[in-house]
Amino acid sequence: MPEAVGRAGPGGRDDRWVLAVDLGTGGPKVGLVSLTGAVAWHEHRAVPTRLGPGGEATQDAGLWWDLVTDSARRALASGVVDPGAVVAVSCTGQWASTVPVDAAGLPVGPCQLWSDTRGAPHARRVIGGPVAGYAPAAALRWIRHSGGAPSTSGADPIGHILHLEHDEPEVARAARWYLEPVDYLSMRFTGTAAATAASMTGAWLTDNRVADPLAYDPALVVASGVPAAKLPPLGPTAGLVGTVRADVAADLGLPDGVVVVAGTPDLHSACVGSGALLPLQAHVAISTTSWFSCPFPRKKTDAVRQMATVPGILPGLRLVANNQESGGRALEWLRDCLDGDDPDRRTSFDELTALAATAAPGSGRLLFTPWLAGERSPVDDRRARGGFHNLSLRSTRADMVRSVLEGVALNSRWLARSVERFVGQPLGTVRAIGGGASSSLWCSIYASVLDRPVEQVADPVLANLRGAALIAALSLGAVTPGEVRSLVPLAATHQPRPDDVLVYNELAAEFPRLYSAQKRTFARLAG
Image 1 (cartoon, rainbow, N blue to C red):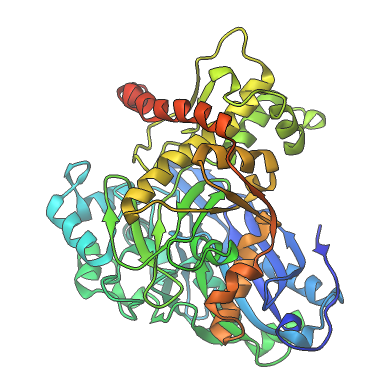
Image 2 (tube, rainbow, N blue to C red; image 1 turned 30 degrees about the horizontal axis):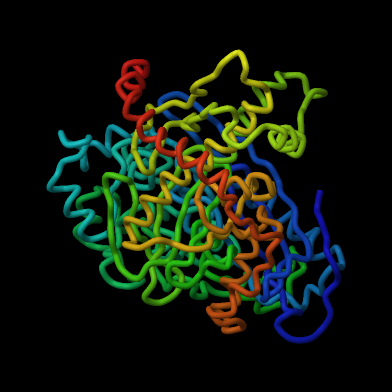
């Protein structure tokens, strides 16, 4: 159900609004957010994912648009804000996914999600080889230019496009453009096909040795085998794509002349929506997946730990990009295992975290490794699997729940230490966002595990909506970069507890050891 907060009146930037869209894998969130980040209305709509043979993972991009526009119509008709005070549309969301569209921007096939691996055989022909699955010379050229390289798993735009071009010729013939999800939404709003170096990060087709490149790297495009004519034109990150089409504006109830800001990946809106926009300001996302990031002033890659800097929001700054495959998803998995299939027995996450609070820090030395869907950073092993370690007859249900919270945090610490080595210095206070950051207990655990203050952002599940609106505000000159941190409200600041830090230091030392001891087992059991 939609949620509304307050009522807007005429005035300055606090009373000018952004129609913000956060298109996550679970479905779109739509909100009305002021140019200073106040969320007046929001709702989430779920979408199904089709998982099929050969690694298929797809969603209906037409359904996204139907849900986004339905929510937008109801938001603008709600009376919470004056529709005439809406000045911009800004989209953020999942990336490294591919929507094939025709010249009008209408989907001609489903969106291949970031987890779709059907293009793996074609990707391996492009860059596969004997060293960790890569051809060294090809991988080195890619990394030198773009900072990353196509995945040999096929789970990125190059793999997706090659799959369509080789295996689904009818879709390929109908496709005028291959768009990232945020660029697809922008085209539906404006009628213009456009992308940025940020939105196309997952394709690794721009020369990221220069700031915010506005053209694809010709050598990488040729090497990839994708049709250059179907790649959308590049514009500046956080630039303006155009204005909302007259027919779309009339349908939604928007005034004429509302501008559409170039779409951004969720990493970028999370950076802004957490208030960690300036150099080396860190944020951690405790979402379905998890990451640990900060802005950084130069191009750099750590191929071993699957970490690189990608084009950022502010001129001269890039963002550290990495990902852990299971974050808050691990707690959802545990709840489903404990509750079974009876919908009347569904335990709430508040109940689970309240139970976890009754267990002692360290969970009786029960250690959970959250590699339920494999791992990317700081080790790239899609065959890794999670587990409870040191489980005994004395272990309680509360211990198990708390160990999941602690295990996700300890996994983040493993990644955070790698990020600090990557940027060459310790990072300070960390901003926490995502659904997991709604839990004060989980944020407190993070503070002691990371041994630094953790600032729990208010309404952390809305951080990306807020970030999308603040990106629009930056683009329009309504706020300055130096203001952004103060515009993001905090629910609490959690300090590390010295006794807990000692407990978690001991458990953290076991994490890389457990992986090293089990990686051959993971490979054998994967078959």
